[in-house]
Amino acid sequence: MSQPPILQPPAPGVAVPDGYPLSGLTEAQRAQFAALQALVAASGNNAAAAEANAAEANAAEADADAEADAADAAAFATAECLLRYLRAAKFDAAAAAAALARTLQWRREFRPHAIRAADVEPEARNGKAFFSGFDRAARPVFVLNCAITLSTDPERYLRFILFNLERGTALCPHGVWQVCAIADVAGVGMFNQNPISVTTRLADIFQNHYPERLGWICIMNPSWYLWVLAKLILPFIDPVTKQKINFSTTTRPTNSNTAKKESSGSVVARVDESQTTAQGTGGFISDLSGLMSLDQLPVSLGGTYEYVYDHSVYWPAFTKAVGL
Image 1 (spheres, one colour):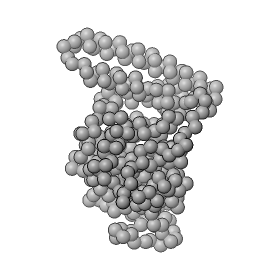
Image 2 (cartoon, one colour):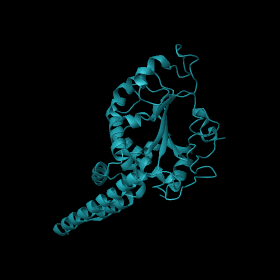
Image 3 (cartoon, rainbow, N blue to C red):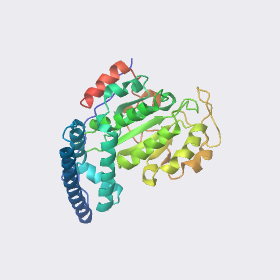
């Protein structure tokens, strides 16, 4: 019998250090953080003045969206958020402020915070993507079943992934700001995937507007077709993010020179043939036990937790867990 999804971190939880989130920073890094705070405050004041002028010039127009966007910007630019941007910018306050400004502009235009659960729920029904389990650092784990991600509406699929990223961070316990991901690519082929442009757009959005959000990602059961896609996608991924990408299989080849047939009939790419493509990544790992306890991982992915996606159970549990 299938168990419910794991949407709460296991005990004993996270030990949050004193002075979080600035604990562990050097004096120079703290100075850059203070400089970033000042830049963001100044930018916010300028933006508020511009919005006030626009509202006065167009007072008859409804401003509910503008108010929601302003509330999102205020909620988004937390100390944790500023530190994420600062880390991504290698503690250059000016560069971090510029990157954050671009993100806030994108959020006003794309409005990921306003994506409604009901609008993207059709994408969730077949279990193509869901949260369940936490890694050893209490970070929530997002599972993507890539062989069934093909959508009749690729734009809705993109918004579904962003909805999960926006809302899934609510599963993070205090002191945790990253999520992790497992992408099972068993059975992936050229006829069951969304356009490559969707994947590259998601990669671009993730890198530019969710910096330092990814703890790690493991690509499970890579086939020859995965390496074809990887050659197209990996060049667009920055080196820091690329190092967080690992590869594994639920049934490992017996040696690096032997290809092994899976039950689906696809061929697992030989490790030696994939090394060139995988350069710059975290490489191959034998299993996920070093990243997460196996009792947090579904049996289908090599764990011991008996979990099979059931939309009627998962969707209400997830939306409740993230406060919707």
